[in-house]
Amino acid sequence: MNSIVVYPATSRQFSVLEALLAEMKVRFSVKKEKAKDDSLMTKEAYFAMLDERIKEADNGKSVIIGSKQELHTFLETL
Image (cartoon, rainbow, N blue to C red; front, side, top):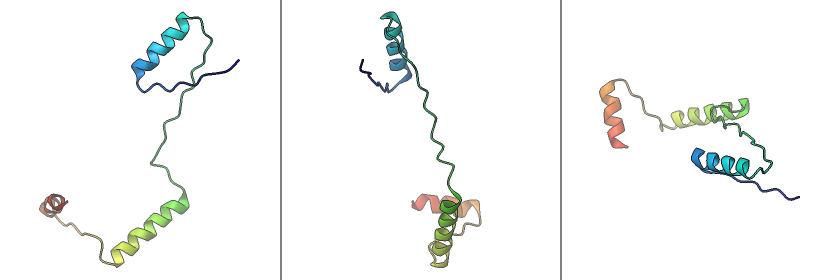
C-alpha cells in the first residue's frame, strides 16, 4: 500500500487531521520533528566567524559604543 506524507501548517490543522484519521480508523503514526537549533555551530565555523569579525575591525568596519546615548544614536542611523 502507498503512503501519504502530510505537513500541516498549524497545530489546529494537525489536530483536525489526527481526529479525522482516528475517526476513519486509518492507521497512522506521528513523527515529531526536532527543532533546529541555530545557536549551535561547528568549531571551524565559529573560528571562521571570529576571524571575519577581526578582519572587519582591522579594516575600520566596526563601531565602538561607549555609552547608552551613543547606542541610541547609532540605532537611529540604521
